[in-house]
Image (tube, rainbow, N blue to C red; front, side, top):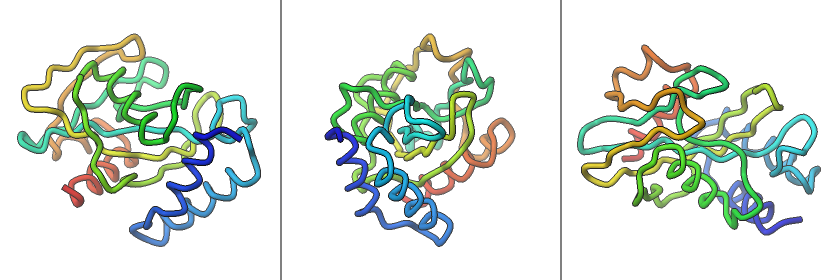
Length: 176
């Protein structure tokens, strides 16, 4: 078992789910990690834990979304954990920084914002979602994983993104 696996198990055990649905997911993620020593890696059959972060600029009331190259959907930054990731939070911050091109992002301090389980072409993603605060005047740069990168006002997200992103935005706003 890797240090990342142990960190993810600890984060999930210590996380206080905001409602019964999120608690069910938390317990399912716990069960997945307990049953799969490789549960953090894309090589784990059927499902694996992923890390993502919604990039937020609270001063302007906006979030940065990426038009994902493969899925062709507006999403938060995130994806697969890598062997060099020491922590789940670190994986989320790495993904957000790489995909947004914004240096100096910082995660909200109280751990994950929410959990989301969704099917992708490679497997089920057991996504642990964080929120990353953008520094003032942040300028985004499109990565190879994006077709586009755009700032959206909080109330514009529902018109472009699916319900999971809308729920992430709503939960993040409640924590700001």
